[in-house]
Image (cartoon, rainbow, N blue to C red; front, side, top):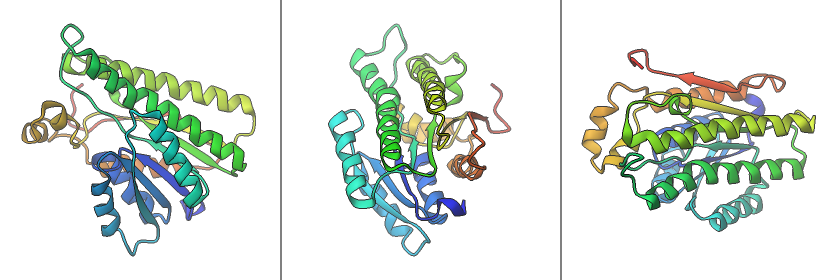
Amino acid sequence: MDRWRGKVALVTGASAGIGAAICRELVHHGMTVVGCARNHKRIEELAAELKGSSGSLTAMHCDLTKSDEIEAMFCAITKQFGGVDVCINNAGLNFTGGLLDGAIDKWRTILDVNVLALAHCAQLAIKGMKDRDVTEGQVINICSQAGHMVGPYPNSHFYTATKFAVTALTEGLRQELAADETNKIRVAQLSPGLVKTEIVGRMLNDMARGDVIMAGGMDASAIAKTVTFVMSLPPDVQVHDVLMRPTSQKR
């Protein structure tokens, strides 16, 4: 990871869970990290906790359902730090409701965050990397085991469809970048199974119940360490997808 020291990383959905863990890991490796979320106050608290580390964390507010806020965030990062070298598309959400009874407005929000914002951030990050002619750039999409299989959980069926879309987007980005023949920008995907995060508690509007459901999951730090594993490999090695599960997970 030494070659990434001092480089700029954007982490979306950085206020908790996997996003916060990734911020912590990258800061400890000396990177200049920008964490974005609607609840940027929690990122500011994490930044204060990490003061004195070899890297730094800056909080930025961004509602990823709004394309103008995404564009404004990238402009702010370019103005303040020069641009993004690493883009970690981590933000994701879900709501209750199956395909037969789910609310269309909720589906639109899930689609906006899980798919459209991810594609928009990747597009802007890669454009900036190319404009600056970076020696090395990295995009990592945090997908899910749900991006590879449809589970028997109606509340997750529309969410699963968005994660299948992320899998397609990651491969599409790989193909388009490979066609450039510059080989300077890599794209990867991580597909975790159960992880101890707030996503289920938020979906159910019951954090205690969510904690019980996710109790057997991996710690978010495991995902963060896998991010740095992907980044630390030689520049001519591209990890395409890492499927991860806790050892106790049955499916």
